[in-house]
Every structure is written in C-alpha cells, then in structure tokens.
Image (cartoon, rainbow, N blue to C red; front, top):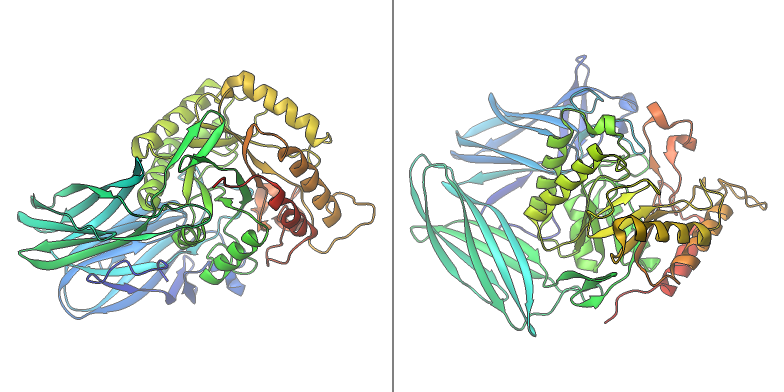
Length: 555
C-alpha cells in the first residue's frame, strides 16, 4: 500500500511490491520481499554492503514511465533497462525519475543498493539505531502522458471565522514542444480553474487562492480531513490528476505557548523509531497501526519521528487520528568533525528539501526539527544550525522549528529555533533528582537565548530489558525504568513553562554494533516502554496512568 487513500483516478499507477531478485556483489542470488530489509534473510542477518535488486514489468503501449521509490537504504542507483533513472542518498526520503517514450513490451528495473558506512556518507554512520539495507518502502510505476502534475502544496489560513487555502500545483511538460494546459481544483466543493502554457520540458507552478468559509478545522479531537483534487487537461481532454488530503489548521506561537488553531496545546507523546523485531525498518501498515493504537491507549497526542523522516503511511495515520508530529531531518549525535564532512551540508539540505516537499500537506506535522544532539557548542556548528533553520523557513514558514540538544550549559544555538528542546536523563545517566536537574536546565535555557520561548522536554527515560524484574529496583529492571519515568512526569506536569514532553522511547530498537555494543545490552536501545516485539513493560502502564494527568488540548 502506497498511501491510505487513492492518489489518482486517471493516472495509471502500479505498485511493484512483491518478491524481487537480489544479487549480492559476490554473485550470490536471493529472492527477497519489497518492501523489506535484506537482513531478514537468514544468510544476510548481518550483511552490510552492496547488492542489486531486479524486477520485470510489462507495458501494453508506448508511454512515459515514472518510477517512484518511497525509501531505499541508504544509497540507490536506478536503471530502467539501459536508461539511467536516478541516484539517491538517504534511506528516509523518497525519490523518483522519469524515462520518456518507453516502448511496449517487457522491461526490467535494476536498483543497486548500498548500506555501507563509507566516506561518501555523512549521515548514515554507526549510530544508536541500525542502518538496514534494502528497498524498505513501497515502489510505484506510473504511466504518464505528455505532461503531469508533479506536486501539490496547500497552506491553510484562518481568516476571521472562516478559512482560506493557498494552493500551488507544479506541472512538468515531458514533450519536446510547447503545450497548453488547464488545471482544475476541487476542494470542499469549490472548483477554480487556471490555464497555462508550458515550453518544451518546462517545469512551472500554477497557484490558487481558495476561500472555504464553511469547512471544519483539523485538531486532535476532531481531525477533519478534506480531499484536494487537481486535474490536468490538454485540449479539453483529461490528461492527469493528483489527489491529496489536507486539513484546515494553523500552528502558531504566543510567548511560551504552542498554539493549534489559536488555542494552547501541550504535546505529550513518544519518540518512535521505525524498527521491529525480525523485519527491521521496513515497517508494514499492520505494525504502524498497532504502534498508533498503543500510543493512543496511553493517552499520547504526539509523536516525534526520531531521527529521520517517517514513512508517509504512518503520517497518514497521524492525520486520521489527530496525532501531532514533530518530524526531523536525518542527523543524530554528530561531532563537529563529522559535521565538517564534505558531504554533510548537501546531504542535510537534500533531506530537508525532500522531507518538506513530500510531507508538506500533512496537517499532523506541527514542528520541523533538525540535527538531534549534534555539536551546537562552537561557531562552526552554530553556522550549520543557522543555515538549516533558514532553509526550513524558506520552504515552509507555517510551522515552527526546533532541535533537541544534549549540550547542557554549553549550547550556543538556543536563540536560533522557534522552540527550545532538550534531552535529559535524570535518574538514568544522571544520579540527581528530576526536580533539581530540571530547574537547573530551565534556568540555563532562560539565560542562554531561550527566554520567552516555548520549551519541550524532547527526551527523558531509562532502559529496561523486557521481563527483567528486580525487587531491589536496580537499573535495567522494569521497575526502575517505571520509577524514573514516573518521577520525571511528576515534575514536568507541574511546570507551566513547558509546551510538551516526549518519552524516550516507544519501542526498543536495534543499534549498530560497531560503536554501541558496550553501552547497549543486546545491541538494542532498551529504553522503549515496549520491547521490539511491542510487548509492554511496566513503564507502559506508568505512561498510561500518567499521561491523562498532563495538560492536553484546550478546546
């Protein structure tokens, strides 16, 4: 399943999920599922390296072919027969390529995939989560005509008691000649039209301003969604269409408050990695839905997509359920030496550009984040934080920005984001009371550039090995984890200066063994309130008890 709804009624689209041939660089061949991680095969449990996926398909008639990959881990080079289609780096954002005038008959897609840690990779490095290999998210093959709708972006605005929406429809002419086109929009019964002429191979945006006086707002209690359909016509004939879901809601800041539709909102939720037991990070919809059900069972209203953009189907679930999302680019715990990697700036910028372009219309996304726990203590690091915040604001001024810091009392970047967020592990790494450490942190934030801004506790928690119980409540026991989470929540729920909290983390996840084995029992980050198979620990019940006592959404 590509999305949780149909995106096209006219455009011919084919999902290529299924079994693909996979040949490792040493020539050994397998048949593997797509989406999937190569590590789920018994021969490839620890494989890190290159391999090539192959898939054949048949075309009935000549057309332009668009191939879209929702996620390949972590570097991909794609061919259609002998035509090169695309090169892409980063497992967590999608990419596409178009091959024009493909003839009828059988064709073969070839995808060379590499999940190695090499000098070409600034972001995929040994880290506190695993870098799996494979085509980890859905693949789509589309048959296009002379032109197509490449993208639709929608920005809602509250005007008095009603709503308006600015819509940008980006078109691409695939012809070697000029072409005249018309674009129809259908949103909440309103149907404007604009006509445009595109030169050969031109990419152009058509804009609309739509007044929607009687629509319902999207919020966490009643997450109302509307279908936005764009149609592309040439000489009166329907050539292409594009359907997305949008919500009418506004995110704003007022002093230390985060506002949803003008009313204060308190984010209470979990950090969530895309990782599950034996299947890695190629998460099927069934697991996404289970995660959502369990988080909402606890009373959560928010989720942070640590530390990379998430599968769009999960974001669709968040849209439907009224779950607010902090989504962030892909960079975690990088030193200034790693941030000075020759590819760092470009790979971060590519991730930001793709994340925002692809996920722009999700009303559930309320915060954009960057550079989790990266070096924000020096001027070189500050310049990188500054440029990334600026890039986000160029692409989307409708959502606030933040970054989770762990550089306590040393961070020199707290004046740059709209929201200050910090990761703190009182009771686990720090043997101090949650109250004492929290007050120290809040006092420092106010003096270090964060005064008057909303503040979020972006990570707190403790580790426990599922099933390990100890009457003495020692560290690594389920009892100690539950105690630490409870102590922290008791402090945070009383602090009116906070705008949100996120428990680290929802589920245990695998880590890369190269650098993390000595501090991560079982080569897993064990701080989940459930284990990697979603079996609840005692801390799950603690969160379920405590979350309802926290502030939520003020209707």
